[in-house]
Amino acid sequence: MEHETCTCRHKKTPRGDEFQADLQKRLNRAIGQLGGVKTMLDENRYCGDVLLQLSAAERAVHRVSELILENHLHTCVVEQVREGNDEVVDEAMDLIRKFGSR
Image (cartoon, rainbow, N blue to C red; front, side):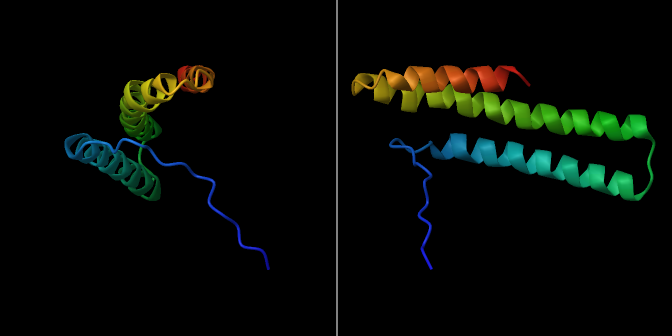
């Protein structure tokens, strides 16, 4: 049996403790909102109320994405460009396109 290797990459520059804590807080809030949606569905709550709660969860996740994208541009992309890897700009543009199409 062949072992699969992880193809994930890691940041060269770690995220700061305060930034990491903020991301975790925001994600936990979104997870809590989704848990609330699940409960609302289990309780057969009004569709409009469920949709409002889903919208709040989506906004929370979207904000985390914005923060990570901004951090990515300021750290990973800048570092790669300084090292002479201009191809990272194409990757960043792909991420921005995918992120913007939501």
